[in-house]
Image (cartoon, rainbow, N blue to C red; front, side, top):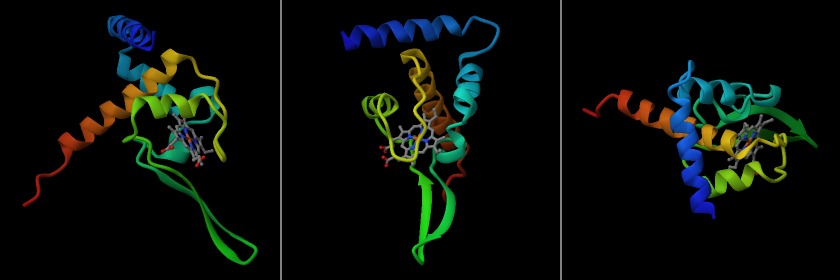
Length: 120
Ligand code: HEC
């Protein structure tokens, strides 16, 4: 069943390619403004993780951060977006939206890696 769903979603995303915005444009806008609060605010532009705030609580220095999310597997990504997470808004995204977000992060990672300067 899950495999079938995966194929179906792939097929929809492939079709989306031929519409007036590309799959990547769609995924990018979704990542940056899903339900009004962008993922990048807490997880960074490409899901690399980000410190959101530093504060002092009971005289202790604390850090609120969004973890790195561009290196986790799809199963975990999907599961996280379908449950409550401490410090993260609940989005109620559709399966297609979750798939698009995951696709976006993977594409960005490939892009970043191909721009990386070769080590000398
Ligand atoms: C207000 C900040 C905030 C926003 C906005 C936010 N997150 Fe998160 N996210 C968090 C925090 C904090 C955690 C860690 C939760 C925990 O430890 O239980 C987290 C955890 C996750 C994880 C699990 C990471 C792991 O390794 O377990 C995923 C995946 C994730 N977020 C995806 C997203 C996506 C996709 C969006 C946009 C639709 C988003 N988040 C928006 C704060 C945020």
